Image 1 (cartoon, rainbow, N blue to C red):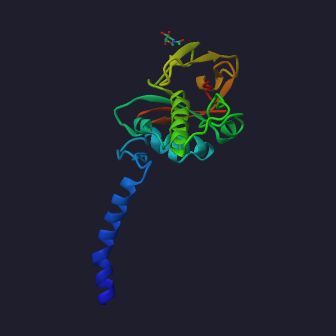
Image 2 (image 1 turned 90 degrees about the vertical axis):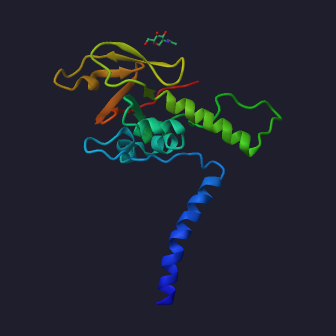
Image 3 (image 1 turned 30 degrees about the vertical axis):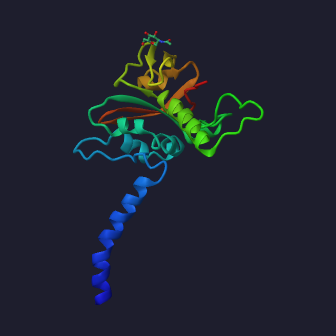
Length: 197
Ligand SMILES: *[C@@H]1O[C@H](CO)[C@@H](O)[C@H](O)[C@H]1NC(C)=O
């Protein structure tokens, strides 16, 4: 009895202590997705969280502050989400640096983390078009959140009964394999990725 009472008193304290502890850990500036509670459709963040074919993209995106956009009910974004298969097929992983280090340069762990995070941020940014919905019925070019990196959509011939996005090619070669509408935008699943150099 006394033990039970004790744990009742101590538990809330332990819970708050562990929250405080998380705040001082290095790298704890990463905000987890906070699902937006609303009565309508799920947010982009919610959709991404439950999309099993895109768990790698999600694990990269959720590390970044910009992932808050995906749960922001007042934003409207088009999210281009590569499948796990597409990410695994990349010759260079999203966190890896495009240019090899000069011989003899040794990075500290902190420097390495910073560079990796910047690379991931560039890569994820190139997969977000800061407007929604966008029309895919005619060829078009759209700016992404990565400054200077536009994506294009071209309409190819195909089954005219199919939804328009099925006939769109991203950057001339990537197919859209699925589409989901969110409360704050649209998510397309890609069989490839948006390339960044
Ligand atoms: C990207 O597209 C916009 C139009 O949507 C255009 O004004 C801009 O010049 C393009 N930028 C690049 C780098 O191609």
